Image 1 (cartoon, one colour):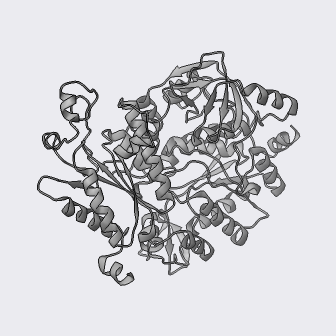
Image 2 (image 1 turned 90 degrees about the horizontal axis):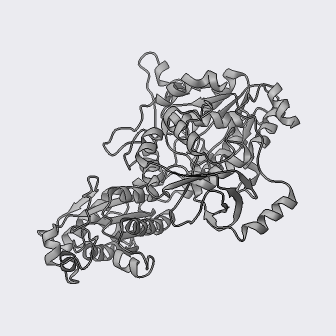
Image 3 (image 1 turned 180 degrees about the vertical axis):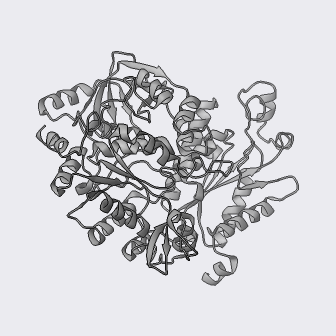
Length: 585
């Protein structure tokens, strides 16, 4: 306990945030008993999100929480951003389980990783249901399934469980071990730096010169230390992988920061991309790591734009909410507007502080990808350090070598597979091979045994989406042809793969035409009610409003539709122009 009190005396920690150290078991004898007991207990395999939450609960990063929330805390957090005792905590930390798991209050369960490694034992004291739309509106401020958290929520179990947890092991991570520090270890490093004030900074993206300038200004303003803490848990789908991000951080830390006043550690956080609420939550977490100041910039924890093309949150909503509660948290805020580069002065400045008619330079995240990385161009010196530019260049292949997914949706018999077969041959002409995941073939092999209830259909689509996401992640091209009738599940797959690599193709063939083409006789059987839950007959097909391409099959041949898809891929840069492809051949 000595270390905690030393930090308290230095003003680094103010209870109740930061007041608890850990609930991680260290007693070998009790640990061995739990491992032996867990063999006979029912097991719950945790998602990556729940693994991250468990680790941060176990190490004190979510203090004062030391377990997943019970119903009273959960409801209170949704409605008031406070736990039932009135303590500010804006994000619900919950553990969802599916109906297939047979558990009751009073049972003990083993919590395991995706690889079935034993992490903890929980005694269940509460089991309660939850309302997806209510939670989505409260936390994310929307029920739009283009929000990555909202789309993911559709895959969660319909019950939450809570109870005391005895942690046996933290999830195993073998990368960057020297930077994977608990709150106590970070506090210890901050104490050794010798400054009473500490300002923390988080991004889920690589750091560039504007970030560097922002963090150094913040540390100078508080006359204290700087804690750089990138997120390495679950971030927004499509983000640059955390290995690359951390390498960028390390390059900057080693070469451009004063190590006598700067600490670097990683945070295994599962982000919610919840904008204002998330900013407040991040401040609480950094308080637990020993910071008493926190940097919040423009669009903090924003997922981008909604399905209507408008941003989910206003640019400075997060700053306003955090500022409103900063005194209660006991944390100072460093608030910044967007930084732009002034080439005449060779410096960065906040846009709201620029007086006069100055030339400014700025590169958006989209421009970084499309105008530089996708074209194999190094980012300019004024924008990023060349060490970072080189790291990004090395891991980011040209656009026509990157992975992508073409996702066909439409009624049974619409012509999805027929068009896909033509696309395969045309892509080969361009020198790109593509894997295929056809709905009928997948049900024979990957998802054999699933029925046609809504739950089973969603499971089928999620499995196809998972396989597709793995192919795309490793720069492969994949084409999926599945009815995928529900908008929420299509949005979930889009989020899983990454919106910038997901191409939704709606094969818009009428029900009447599909029935006439039905060589399997499935529509006729559905009409006779010999089969039920058939899409278009007694189960709805939700027409996509966000398709990248809409194909008609009555007046257009499969070859013409396939050419439209190829033209779209050319436009997006996923295949080279035909002349370029022929030159390579």
